[in-house]
Image 1 (tube, one colour):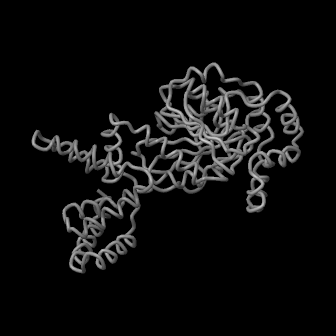
Image 2 (spheres, rainbow, N blue to C red):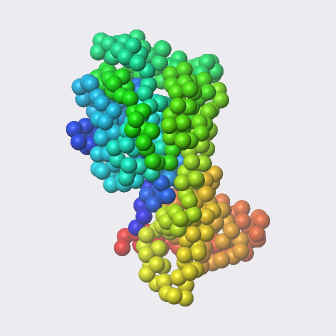
Length: 403
């Protein structure tokens, strides 16, 4: 049976062994979503820089956030590191979590790790969202002083300059407490991890292998980024044959400064990946995430020549259509569906969808509000009947879950 907690972020630190390193990660969102998204972080940050974007997307998609080697709560092995160290760590983490094909969303060095992963493991890469990055970032003159600061265990020496590249002056003026918090994030990064990743950045040029990639991609850049400026991102976009998406009034970390814009861009990219040939598969994943594997398996097992076309139709054009669109998350769409089934009324379908609320996180309190609202606009009798059905179904659910 589908676990309802898969629709909610995990609480507390979670760790996995990825070869020689232990990596800190968070998984959230429905297991049968059309895509699994993996978020990769910048130098000197942890996975929380993606929290707002992840929280918007994990209602509809399966989301993995993790701290790369040397950052956050993950192991910091001795420097130097290579970019392939980072991409191989990610592959081993996916193996440990049982995740196959993923869409990678990386910022700065995270975008370079994503490019290298796609080159090394193309069969595991469903798409790339590359933010404020490049095929080669900086020069030895850029990275050697940072390496020295880290080796001297003095990241205070580089923190202010790094922050000035991360955010616009407007961010500094309007959100000073967050600026202080992100400065703490940089200075409290493992010196070994910071230096090791600086070595990887200094010594990596992905130009040749990135030009050869054959994977759907989107390139996004803050218009005011001075760390990886728009022209660097434009060169990456040209190499991949895609347009550059610029975000106005934004610097190097758009997931923090403009999370709503980043979310919308990712949603549009994922919608474009859902081609007509994928509609049935996408619909089946959403259908399973809402109704549960047991229900869908029973329905599929009972299909005959009489209703085979009908089952394909609803999977493609209901579950693979409105249920799979962006903008509204699965939880919200389920509330709408429950209200419509109450108002019509469609008692058999309503019973099925009330039983499925344990898969979408709809609570009894939210059901109550749906029925109260429907009573006003569709009538007391239908709402009263829906309440009776809900009481019976919810009373049966604990017994079924114990079987």
